[in-house]
Picture (cartoon, rainbow, N blue to C red):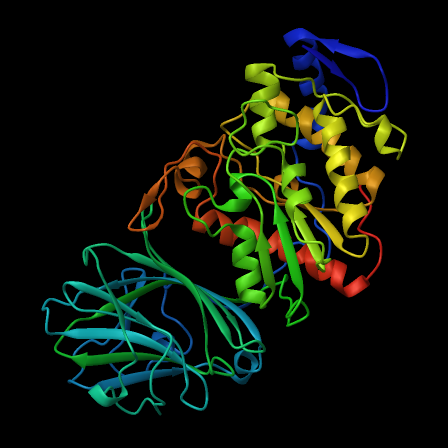
Length: 474
């Protein structure tokens, strides 16, 4: 195998040269670069954050009845009668927010199948944002239901429940992305454990216009609920409707497609931002000329796509090439050249094929803004090969003036760490949703929402805001 350096013809021969190149690149590419103003990490504005390790102010998190803080959790619906509620009002500063992320852990002590307790989130007009509840045998959640002033939890005021089986002995994590400008909520409910199970995930339209109150509901019977780790933030990467109505084409491999779950990270962004997505990505696709790649080459996806220019083109590539280059030695990495003439691209290499792919995108849709997504640090690929492919890819991005949504550098997602591999990647579906404990390659819903969606959204918003050249790579 012959691996050429970027911008030169000096070769690195065999595994010794490859290792030397990889080690040389660790300092340059292993650590995250400083976050930009639009980057996701560390830039959220925290509005409410409670661990309940001590009594809160106001007491009991603002619930006037049926609540106490004990043993590091908030307990609600304690000793409450049938059809009753206890309401926590959020302050005006929260009610004025148009985009919010909420995450909390929840557990029920409901004991009977005919009993039901839950939590409702509503706006100041009584419209439902989201609700979660349970009987002893069913987990229930809702995004639709009648108006309610939250004075009672009568049967006629119940949300329209979606039901699924669950284990009431477990804690569950609820994640909500609420966009009141667009009237959307993106939600997930997962078991809280090292290898979590997804109970529900989706994006739905809502009529609520803000988050005004959290309502503890004793619909019927007895069953205290517990809440922990309640965190409400204004996300730094909120698009605030700037991307609504725009079109996006997505190309690449299984990380874009979604692997066995055909709802990858671009789907999540498009759903929550009201974008129109056309996805051409295929499992197993490569940038380079891998003869046996089950997904073919990404340039073929571009060539088969519609002629109408989208507003954005989003693509990844290189993950399967890393196997072809390192494991199979199917082709060489190559180097980014100085010419923009497609006749000079060496498409027998990864670098030349990448340049040909980018050229095809720019030639076919000159008005589209192109974003390459650099995937997370992979425990399933040779590290030195990842760094070498990354160097070539970023050089191509600089040369061709395309933006990079850099999950690799701008997030902490690193599946070389076994706990992250287990928590954030999947191989197969469980309960119809991505599972956990994967090989380290394919992000599951937690990996997508926590790491991929913020970074891609930030890049798209930055491009939309500036209508200018993508940020320069240093």
